[in-house]
Amino acid sequence: MQEIETLKRWVAESRYTVFFGGAGVSTESGIPDFRSVDGLYHQKYDAPPETILSHSYFSRHPDRFFRFYREKMLYPDALPNGAHETLAEMEKQGRLQAVITQNIDGLHQKAGSKNVLELHGSVLRNYCTKCRRFAGLKEIMASEGIPRCRCGGILKPDVVLYEEALDQQTMYSAVDHIRRAELLIVGGTSLAVYPAAGLIDYYQGNRLVLINLAPTPYDHRADLLIAGKIGQVLSQIRRDGNA
Ligand code: NAD
Image (tube, rainbow, N blue to C red; front, side):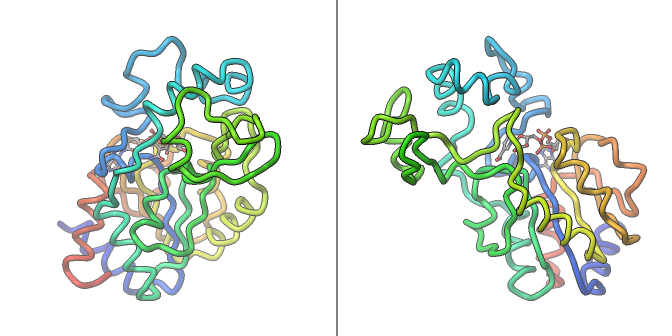
């Protein structure tokens, strides 16, 4: 496939490569995304995910929030796929400077990536809303209903809910990496969730690669557009020894 050859060459030639991804990076690990046909938007709930996963819904209906959250957002047994593994290997070889992710599943770190900017936080971290004590995912999994701290406070996942601001430092750092990137690989994201999607606007290079199953509003900006499964696509550059 011509596109894979081009991608391999660009990875080999680049002195500063950044990856920016979303939920589509983890679908091949069995975690549904929000917008594909079999993603969360096509399943049946009394409210859309944006409503349930919002700050006001969490405050008003923590019971319903956690029912949805436990059922649909937690995949403690999911394993990294070819996309996570290839990116981790590229970083180890000095060929990738940063992973910027909208995902909250921790799979990039599970695959071995070190420099991961989690724009939307992580389900692996939780904090008591009253005493700020840290709690891991195991504690949430071991609890039922609304997870509570020993002090009585509710344990809130360290994920950025709708209506909440993104961490400023993480955003600055993401902008900085994207500004410096010679090669920017974007994949598995509908590029519909802001402000994260707007990060692409900071890219100043001429090698923007977009790997996605469905079309995105940024397709016309891509210097290389690959319509395919990102785990499979990135595995190919790895298999051939160039990653
Ligand atoms: P999205 O659901 O809006 O879009 C996912 C995109 O990935 C779609 O365009 C789809 O066509 C594409 N896709 C799906 N599987 C793919 C594959 N194997 N290869 C290539 N492309 C594939 O996701 P988003 O843009 O990341 O925005 C949704 C928000 O939901 C994010 O903010 C994220 O925090 C959150 N979310 C996270 C997870 C997770 O952590 N795994 C899962 C669901 C939602």
